[in-house]
Amino acid sequence: MTFSVRASAQPEAQLLQDCGKKELEACKKLGAYYLSVSDWEKAFMVGEALCGKEISEGCTYAGVSRLAQGNSKEGTQFLSKACDEFEPLGCRSLGRLMKKGKEPVLANMYFKRSCFYGLKEVCKDVKSTKDAFSKSGQELVKSIQDECAGEETSPLCRSLIETVRECKGELKTKDCQLLAGYLSIYFRAKFLQTEAKLGLLSLHMAQKKLSQPSYDYALLSKEIKTSQNSYVLGFLRICSKRFVPGKKYVSNALELDPGAFKELGPRTAANIRAYFMSGKRSDCKEPKSGFEAFAVGVLDPQDPSRLDIWRIDEEKTVIQMRNGLPNP
Image 1 (tube, helix red, strand yellow):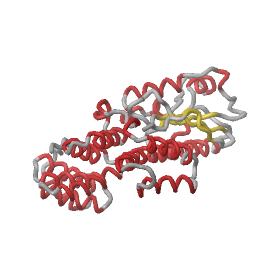
Image 2: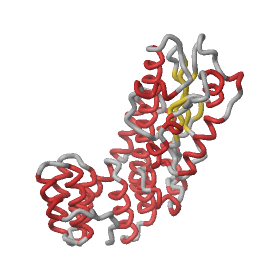
Image 3: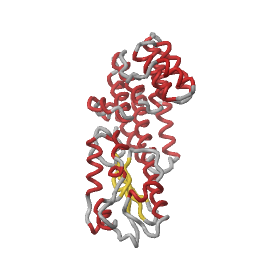
Image 4: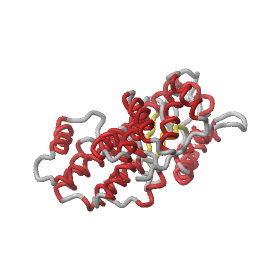
């Protein structure tokens, strides 16, 4: 099995020294270096230690090393842990393993997970998985989307997930394997939505510190707490242009710091930028009476035109404007 990884340009001795000081980035680079030179035992030692510290890349290093040494059982266990922790290279490695084992449907699901977790170069080769489910599997997907759509998982939602976990009812074994992969994608997307809403609430708090709301994102940005860059926060540009004094204004986070969103890719960034450029002057609230801010992201990397959009206003009301949750 081949494994593409960016090897560190730093000498091994320096990486060893820095890793010994418990610098995790140096340890990750060291593991990548050992993989690049096919030193499987050292790569495994570093990877296993990182994996034990819940560093998902380490689980991938350990898994790939064990596969290269002929231990497919242990290698698969490490790679499964990595993939379940949203590590895209671990999912891709499992996809390659399934493809080699003549399991194209399962291979495609692992490649799909790798795509959704950030490895965009595999996205173009991933096929839709909807037709891979049996009729019972498709019905269960629809039920989960309906029952698990709210903020809190309902008892029925938990029951449906348990059905997948225990592979009960009329589900086929392959249904359960595919459903587990799709649910991982789906609930990760739900988590990103939660992060977007928290970002909007943080923006609302920043507005409350001002004498009246502002449409200048740059003015508010230092007070806004967000731990992800899957969504762009901000205001319709026409509102910023209309109500920010002077000629200098920033309407959204992408405009303020494009480099922070380079992982989105040019097409996704262009589609998000186009949304903030939309709207009419009449869509803008007067700052004296309130404001409207938006979180705009893409949850399906295979369809960068399908936006997921949330809005907040001065009353702290958060609503979903457009649903971009991924389909099977």
